[in-house]
Length: 448
Ligand code: ATP
Image (cartoon, rainbow, N blue to C red; front, top):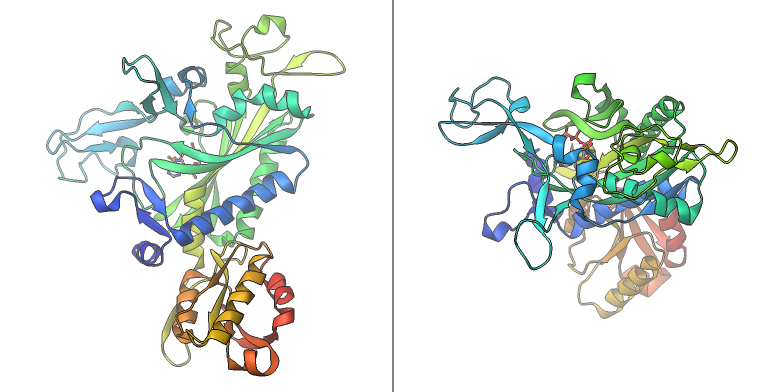
């Protein structure tokens, strides 16, 4: 983990937030390469979950959330972790994360009884700070999918089963944020709410567990580092009938990367009011403040039914950490020297191709390199970097360390002889000459 954290800072992947003022605990910023990696991971998820399917629509909802949503979703009452205080040094801990009832800071066993601590952040809305006009920062993206259920159904007329996908920030006031970007207070989630007929929920739960394992494999996560964990009944979230966690062997241990929950009709049911009009079963108090009727009508028998929902919910930040951990390698070369390589899958690599002029400030070479950069950039594969440092060997090493799959070097032969460039492969370190006219096709074939 220390090596990853150091590399992340040195090469511009991830920085402690507000660093120049001492940071803010559990909050991180993504630097020039981190933002690319993160965007690529999110794009891969969106491609698989929305574009490559015909039964999922996307959504991008607001972060600030009406407190009633989180009241009726059950989060106000139950979205808590057990907290203990150390009476000696006044530090606070998550009770279920302590191996023994001893303060990890000062060693005292004088701890308070665990009490529930709500993880939601509140913020004032509007100019009057009288405590009554507040909103929550959403603790999961899912609720906005449920509250927009009718909007999406009315505007897209889907048939069951269908899903609504969303990627976005979520906030949890974790008692003890830790392990770099693994447990943070501000993070991103990639969530799909997949609505199904009650009775078909268990089949779809199994299906999504298999789909999600396959997807993580396609992102370069070795299956030997993944394990499934059937969450025992007494650990289930308040909305869940069954949850399977996809656990990943992080540098600090085996922990949750993604949770795949069968949320039943809990949320749509809770947000549904006036069910008297509808022939639906739900666990809610009809005197809620929501007017939404979050149900679907069966076209044949005209009955209304609240769908069940299967939710694969993955953390973007935990995904980035897993993918960096998988990619990180220190290799000893034949000549005894070492190289650090991030062997990202090309579609996730922050920089796809670095174009390096052999001689900096040489007008002909630099112009040619710039024009190659511009042409490759038009392919829409992601970031193509022009880098005029003049030291090719160092450039290759640096690009190994940030995981750039291909480096293209423009030299005298290019401009004076045959219009070929050297293409150097990150993984094999082999170099070959490719004609500039064929470079785009060559690059496209490698970076998919
Ligand atoms: P944990 O038990 O580790 O606190 P959770 O079970 O509360 O996680 P979920 O509510 O299932 O997490 O959230 C879905 C996903 O969101 C998680 O699998 C994880 O990837 C991500 N996630 C949740 N909390 C955090 C956090 N504090 N920091 C980073 N990612 C998080």
